[in-house]
Image (cartoon, rainbow, N blue to C red):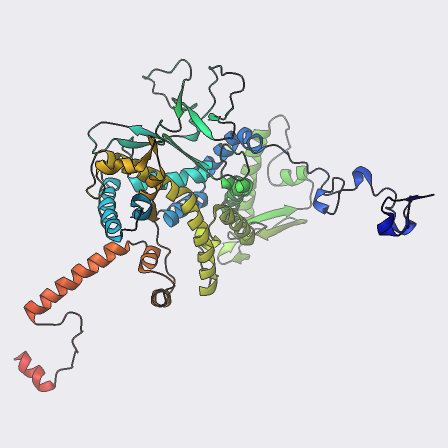
Length: 569
C-alpha cells in the first residue's frame, strides 16, 4: 500500500512507501533504551561504564554538600604535605611576589569629556605615592586586625582561594587613629552559612549563607559571629548558641560592603570549591606512598639478611629455640622466639669462623634453610617513576610545572624549561587577573573613594567628587578614575642576555612598551626612569667636580719595569 503526498507538484506524482526498504531498516534490537546515540561515553550498558552513574545536579547541589569534606581535606594536605604547601607558596610568589604595586590608569576622557594627559600623569604619581605609603606601612593600615600589609592581604587571598576556592572579606569603617577609616576584615569561608535559628519568609532564596535576587545576584551575606569549631580558652565564656550578622553587599549609594570572589565553573554557582579537589585522592595516595617507602627503607636497614626455611613453621620455630607454640600466650611466644633466634644465631656464628663476608661471619644453616642478603637501599616495588607521575598530576592541579613543584631540574633542558615556564606564566596571569587584581582593585576603589571625599588629593579635590556620582549612586566616572593595573611577581629569566635582547627589540619595533617590559621584571617604569634620571644627574655632577669619566671605563695598562721600580722606591 502506498500513500500520495500533498506535494504532487514537487514530487511529480511520485508515491512514498509506507515501509522503507529492508536495506534501510534499523536492525532489530538496535533501538529503544539500548541505543545511546553516537557517543560511546553515554552507553549505559558497556561493561566498563555500566556502574559509572555520576550525579546530574545543579552547581549548588553538587558543590554545597561536598564543601565541608573537600575543604577539610584540602586544608589537611596544605598543613601536612610539604609539596602541596610548596605549591601554595609558588602561587603566592608567582602571582603577588614580594610587593603588589599599584599602576593607576585613570581615563580623563570619560571623567572630563576630553583627554588630558598632563592631569593623568599628575594624578597617577600622587595617588600611587599615597597608596604605596598606606599599603606598605608597618602599621598594617588596611587590615582590620592589623596583622597584614596590603601585599600580605593579597597573598592571603591567593592562598585562601587555593584552599577553599573562594575569598571572603568584609569592609569595615574603623576610627582608631588610622589616617583613613577603610579597613578589610578577612573572613573564614566556614562562617558564611545559613542561620539555623531564624525563620525566613516563604520564597526567600538563601543558599549556603547568601541571599540571592531572582536573577541570582547576591543581596546580603549571613556571617556567623564565630567559627563553628573555634578555640575557646578555659577562662573565656562559651557562647550559648550561634548568632549571625546579615551584611548587605552594598551601601545605598553603591559602596561595596562584602568582597566575595569565586570563579564560576557553571551557571548559577553560588559558592566556590578548591581546584585541588580533583587531585585530593592522588595527593593523599602520594603522601602515603612516600611514608610507606620511607618505612620500608628503614625496616630493611635494620636487617642484613633474612632466613627462609622449608620446614613447617612450628618445627622451624622450635629449631630456633622458641619452644612449642602456645596459642594462649602469643606475646610470650614472640619473646621466646626472638630470644631463641638470637641465641641460635650467636651459636652458629661462633662456630662458623671460616664463613665471612667483609669481616662479618655467616652462620651455618640447617638443611632445607637458605639465607637472602638484603640491601638497605632497596626501594619499593614501584620506584621513583610512580611518585613522579603522581607529582606531575598534582602539579597540573596546582597550575605549576613538575620541575617547580618537585624542585627537580635534573632532566630539564633550556627549551623544556622555557616551555614549562611559559605555560605556568599563562596560568598565573589568569589567576592574577581573576583573584589578586580583582581583590586589590576593590580595596583601592574603597580607599580612593574615601580619599576623594575627605579632600586628601590635590589632583582631584572633594569639590569635584560630584562628577563620580549620578543620582547619589557611584557612576561609570568612578570606574574611570579608579581604573588600574597591578605589578606583581617578576616572570623571571632563564637566559638573561637573550631575553633582555628580545625585550629591547620589542620596544624598538613598537611591539611592546617600557611599561610592559619593566613590569615583566616586577618594576614600575616611572620609578625606574626617575631613578635613572637622578643617577644621571649625580654622575654628571661628580664628573664635573673630579674631572673624570664615570661612564667610560679607563683603560688599564701594564706598567713598564722602570716605572714599577720607581713606583716601588
